[in-house]
Amino acid sequence: MNKLLKIYNFSNFKIKKGQGVFLFDDKNKKYLDFSAGIAVNTLGYNHPLIKKVLKEQLKTGILHLSGSQLHKYKILLSSLLSNLTNKGNIYFCNSGTESVEAALKFSKLWGNINNNKSEIISMQRGFHGRTYGSLSVGSNKYYKTGVGRILSNIKFCQFNNSEHLSKLIHPKKTLAIIIEFIQGDGGIYVCNKDFAKTIKKICKKYNILLIADEIQSGMGRTGKLFSYEHFGIKPDIITLAKSLGGGYPVAATIVNNKVSKSIKLGKHGSTFGGGMMQTRLAYNILKFINKKIFLKDVTKKGIYFYNKLNLLKNKYPNIIKEIRGSGLMLAIEFKKNYKAKKITNLFLKNGLIITAVGNNSVRITPPLIIKKNEIDLGIKKIKSVLDYYNK
Image (cartoon, rainbow, N blue to C red; front, top):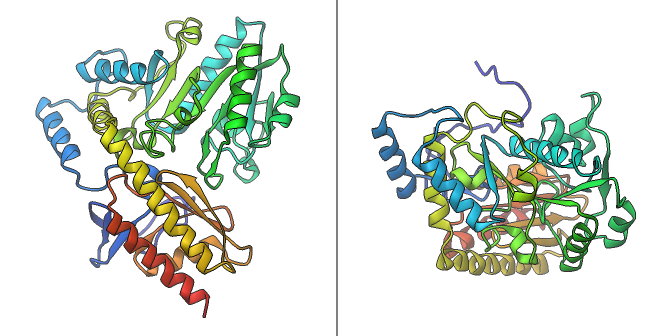
């Protein structure tokens, strides 16, 4: 009997195994996965690197060590992440929402010794998690309904609206701006360069912290290791999770030296953060992804995929409203009378897993190892559903 809490629209089939970019259910039906566990399984399923690392770690006999216990991979991963980002210090935890909670808390600690700054500006359509702090900086009202009081001093800016952002800034009160440079749950909306330039300028002028949420867009998904790199920005705080562990729960909050100085011993912690298994996996996955040839390949496949989707848009203008995205982080927005949940159910029947976002959009985040012929297969499956509607 299924006694799971009904907080998801559970699938009507049970996954049994995976290989590459495909999943198989208990009846051996094959599904092409354009979701990757919501942008987590970046190297797909049964990848030789992950299998190798898991086997090597099991030989040590260690699954868990406390947060205060040092080991080789905690040090290696923290050093690599620091060198590849803002040269800051790393806090390890388990999930994206925990990473954001830490980012908000660290920001507040810094604000308390910097003129008691306390206001945080987030973005409309932004999503940063479902625990209280991260929920507070997310704009989806449904997620907040019925949960009582959440964090105050939060303002929401229209995404890509520099004028609106300027109006929300208080020179003495604004503590931080938190942003997904490519909005995931909001429907894959990409920050424009003018807006990014405005954010950079404002943060520097008023000594405002910039928190980049790279939980979904990070780890090579956009063709850069992190999406903020597309905009010539260096955030003060960076949040990571999802594909960092390639399927194993691990997250990180990267805090630059300016902010690190305000975080004292014992102010934060995590029982499972920075364990040997997860950091060993993350370190090896990060090294695997952070290669020019790999990231260039993601860019090429992203452009190929985007162009293929736009061909569908041109063929079915009465069904598809817009194609959006960057790299292998894409969205199809349908016209208002085409509901995403119904469409994704039709995709499932056709052996394709895609995530519904909002009422009329679907999000495409396949494993980064996907091949062009597998993209073509997915396009064929999408087309067959569009043909069904176009009869």
